[in-house]
Image (cartoon, rainbow, N blue to C red; front, side, top):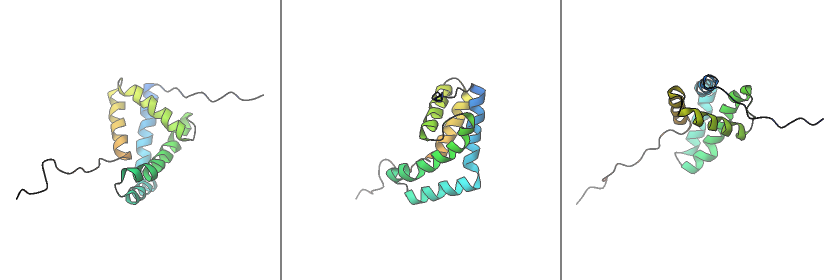
Length: 122
């Protein structure tokens, strides 16, 4: 008998808070911090390289946590978890704050040149 396709996990707001907290903690683990730092250094603040080098490492770190909650161990599981978090962001300020923190861990703000000129007028 063939097994039925896996259903998307459904988490409550409280469960989503717990999982999101665990994902953020996973990024703080020394081995994961080293992995992310190495990927960022290799990317040299180039957005294309960030997507090629940093995003896969970040996805792996998240997968290691969320697979314990029924999400598949592929990129699709991370996307489904991200959609779930996005859905609860509007309902729960704690999830919204943790989501902002997670995004800052994934892609830190890129530096932008000052407006109005680094070029002195002659």
